[in-house]
Image (cartoon, rainbow, N blue to C red; front, top):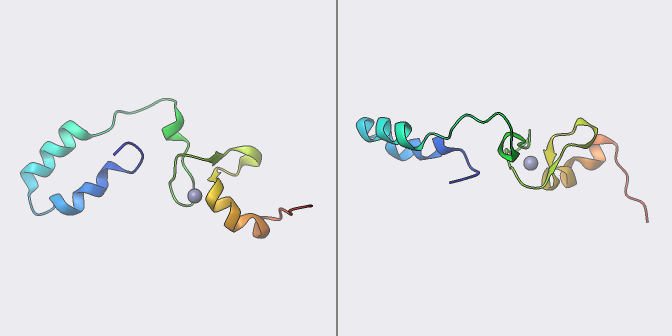
Amino acid sequence: MSYSHYAKAFKQLDAKPIKKAKFIKFNQPKKRSCGFSLRRCKNCGRVRGHINKYGLHICRQCFREMALGLGFKKYG
Ligand SMILES: [Zn+2]
């Protein structure tokens, strides 16, 4: 559970509030000041394949879908 959000496990733990509190206490990711996990895709939240260029802040998969709409053209 390194990339995806740790809160995804809450869906299962909602039935067990004490276990949920324990899970939050011990499995909460630490606050980061820098690093790749802060640079997430605006659209889908993916960490890998991130495009910072031109202030896009989206992943390469979302870029492929949105490129034409953003005004990018493919030559050749
Ligand atoms: Zn994305």
